[in-house]
Image (tube, rainbow, N blue to C red; front, side):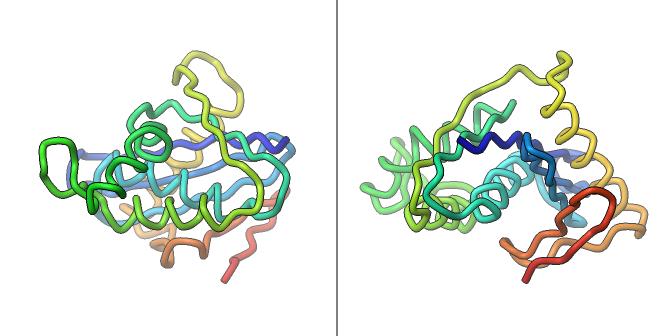
Length: 167
């Protein structure tokens, strides 16, 4: 089983620079950011990038401290899809492009994807690493020292100390 921790960061919610990150418990990680967004967008993007970066048949477990991201991807998504991407109150699903992309990524992945909530900021090594990377990406985008992320799926991966761009 592959275990990956994800996290998102928003410097001023909403509208501030955002960062997202995933950390594979065997070593590789990736992060990115955008000039403007919300914490929810950052959390969903982290989850999406983690799924896209781990194709194959081996089961994937994503640990996140965002109940919103986990519930979007596991509990709420099937119902939203059945209801034509509407919530239980009939309103449009927020962050629909990301939610649809997550649905596609999970559906197209050969192996199963599961989710586990972890409490944030309590010393969980991989959650703390993802939090740090997401925060660095958000601050870097804000300060102009970290490029904005390309479209979903084209992340900057950190293996050891060498960044590699995936396209």
